[in-house]
Image (spheres, rainbow, N blue to C red):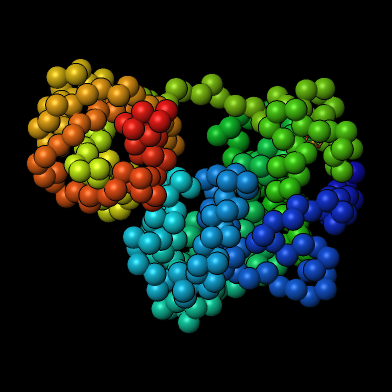
Length: 350
Ligand code: SF4
């Protein structure tokens, strides 16, 4: 199979099997001249960088209903957008999202630039997002390479170099398949192939439109690609979170704008450090003197470390620094997942 037949096979497969996604203009509509909304493409790409399609979909629908245009999003207050983002993880992306929306609104009259270079120049837009929006929204022949596409390339060409060292090689291989013919559909066809057929475990090679070209399939064990360096364990951190209750209300605090979960609502916590806290230390780190009771601990995995968070609870009478007193029944709304878990543990719900 040469490059032309490989492209033709994958695009035909996409014509028949494209996933229906709320931000996508499918191949038939595209052929009929329907153009994707760059705002929706951009928003979906930012959301999908950290999570899966099923998880991102309700967030995407909620955002686009509430803020139907990039200018509407740009005009919103930070806190409302951060709260709506809660649960999508990686809050730096939500901050970047707003910075970018405001730049598009103020510097470009609410219209996204239509080239990869123009998009890349926007604040908070990385190489991947610029390529994806250029290809999908504007049909530019951009090389869109995410983890799915890396996996497909590693298998199609049986690349022996392990990840992450293989990244430049995989990117170059992907670039060798990009052409001016239907670049937006091509990028999405590769994404769909990686997500639904060339899956990380148990690829469905018998349904694969490019199986005849696949070098990894010929080895008999395509799932062994991409090769990987042995992974270092994620470091673990420890901390304590405090559910302080006063007259049926919980003390929530807003985290500093910079840093992990920046600007998000949270339970008060100790520092997070390498060594576990003993009970005396945990009580000393509490935000107010009270009869603190241990409610157990929760686990949460962030991108760069795993966290074990002890949860402590007390009825308090004094003030808690910076507290936003919130009725217990409403305290979960707008909390990021780690603190939602801690709250639920503090309320003995899990
Ligand atoms: Fe992936 Fe199998 Fe297709 Fe190769 S034949 S690209 S391993 S699904």
